[in-house]
Image (cartoon, rainbow, N blue to C red):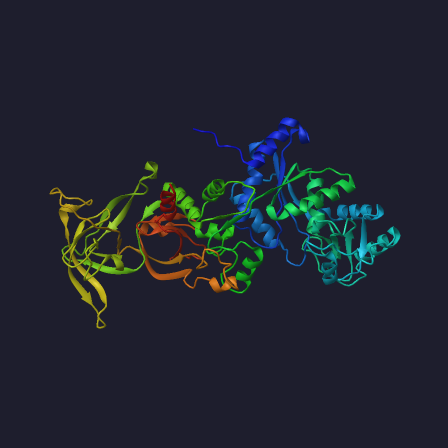
Length: 555
């Protein structure tokens, strides 16, 4: 087996270890904002940060970057902890919150003011943007830039005490208004927000910006390699400037490419719109690209980690075909999921030459990919259900399923032949009358005659009623951003609910989260909406693997 080559972050880390930088330590962190649920893009960051710590015998912190009281809450904290654990990672005793460092951050801000490197500014947010300049034009200095240290210290303390209105003042770093990097043009460090914090209550009236807080959090926690997505590359110079001015421990910021997915939006703002405006049924809706949504849909941690591993780590953003994600879950569930029979659109079949009072319990293998999965008993009797689309009264040439006068095989059971079609007053087919061959038990006969079609079925007398939810892409276009509004590309058929499904009786004790392959239909899992006597299944993926075909074309 050929060893997998190192990605560029692993090369940096190994060089740092060899050179003795950070005394050979590897200490990473996963720093989500608790203002929404994690999505598949975050899974890449989770696997990268925790995975590198694991690989190099280091540590990884889970740190909540909770610096904005307007959108954050305990619900999101708990959901994020649940998702990280579910993916298979453990932060041990290293659970941290940016809000726990607020006092220390304030002290550092005071230090910068005393050094003449920060000042209180009275410009409004719009005026700050106007004064900032453009990529081709330098900015203008704020008229408040040269306040004395004493005045700035007084105003900053009064900001903290809540004496000023929101938006009336900010604390800004004093750097260079003509710097070619706009992030260095006197960036805002603190803004006034008079909203209680979900952890700190009403203790604070000022809150740090991301650029000010993030480098301090990394420094306080002695992080060695601070891994960020590419949009933070232009912020690295500011990250380092703050730490250099303060003369405190400086981690190394490294940027990697963000993961994007076709037929999906991963903007937290847009995901929030989908939830709040009712386009989906919550953050864990199985159509959502959130980890909670994927979990509810039936995805496994192993499949998601495999997907992240296959997408790799690069210095550029990438758009990955959703089909690869589906390929990964199929590969995983093909090995794990027991095969069962479920009829989603039932059509009754009466086997006229089968005794009315007879029931046979037939042997069926649970998983041909796993011998240890064993077998189960399934009941067979005079009346069964098959899929409605497995019968055609006037079939085309290459239709090999059931039709008048045609013989097919029932999986694990017998050959049957259709002799009569029963219709209602509207001309709709409501029942088929068939005969079976008693000598074909198990699905073969001694005369060796060929039967092309094999159908799944359930016993009408023993089956269980179920609801099945068929999920598809939430958007009709590969790039949902195409057009004026991403909401215009919502798929109206992203969820189809089937209420009259019939499943075999072995599923009566199925529990929430249990996963199965419905023969010929796809992979399904039991949803949390299931109640006693009423199972609800979510389709995780169809059986057709389009990614394998894509790969074949590319090879």
